[in-house]
Image (cartoon, rainbow, N blue to C red; front, side, top):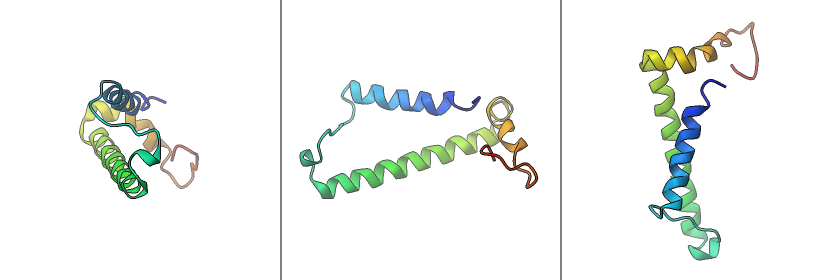
Amino acid sequence: MKALPAPLMLVGLWESMVVKGWTRCYLNIEEVGWLMYVVYLIVHLAMLDCGMYWLHRATHEVKLLYRLCHAEHHVYNSKHKLSPFA
């Protein structure tokens, strides 16, 4: 729960970009066609994955972020402590 604010702030940033018109938000596939829809979907998922990778890496590199947001995650990384948080 401690780590939720950072990804949620990113979602808020992305939503504000849509609202301000800095990006396009297609409500119907017919607006762009199936091919471009699939291309946009793949690019979007790749960008999300890349962003989450760098965010996770930052929590390991920046000691303050690690201590405040990420250390709890590693408490559950033992094979004897299986949980949804591992």
